[in-house]
Structure formats: C-alpha cells, structure tokens
Length: 142
Image (cartoon, rainbow, N blue to C red):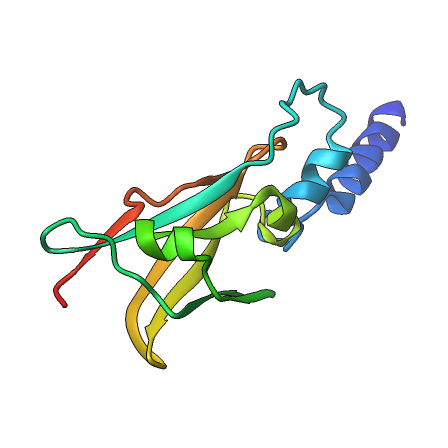
C-alpha cells in the first residue's frame, strides 16, 4: 500500500512539472530556480559590426531588431554610424529571451532600403545577455 501511494505521489509530481517546450523566459527561469549567483552590476550590450569588403564601417540610417515577442527600431548615433557598430540587445531586454536562447532578426536600412538582413541568436545566463551566434561582424559588398 505504501508503495502504491508513493508511486501515485511521484506521478502527480511529474505531471505538474513544466513541459520541455514551454515558453518561459530565461529571466523567469532564473528567478525561480533558487540558485545563488554572483553577477557584475555592469550592463551588458550585444554589438553587431557592419563593414564593407575593405573593412570600412557601414553607416546605417536606421535599424530594427525583431523577435517573436520583441520589436525595437533605432536611429543610430553619429558615433555608431561612424564606427559601424550597432547595439542589437542589452540586459534591459533579457525578459524577451527564452530558455535556450531566442532568434532575432536585425535589419539595417540606408535611404529606406534594407541593406542587411541577419538573424542572431541571443542567450541569457541569469546575469547577462550574450550572443550565441558565431559571427558579430557582417561584411557587405556595397
């Protein structure tokens, strides 16, 4: 009898756990796993670099970053335009990342024409966002 009660209790607990494919944000998962963390207070950013075939920076008029539940459109600063560096994500946006990482589409425009259209995967390690995609530099033939 005790074994039957124990088996029923185990089955109930298993049925109450989250499904592997459930859409919980990485931030929520980190909040509820009760693991101690030592994080820096620095705000992490994920930059993407645009260069031409001669490694000169490419200046965008504006760009957007789009995910399943996220959209952000930006007009880059003069400094970013001159360096070809564009921030696509920061720790402030971590709540939009799912466990295992999330894909985001980066579109860069010049004169309202899309010149770059790249997908990046962003992760979250319970402290900071980071780039899971291998390449942070896009080289364009323009």
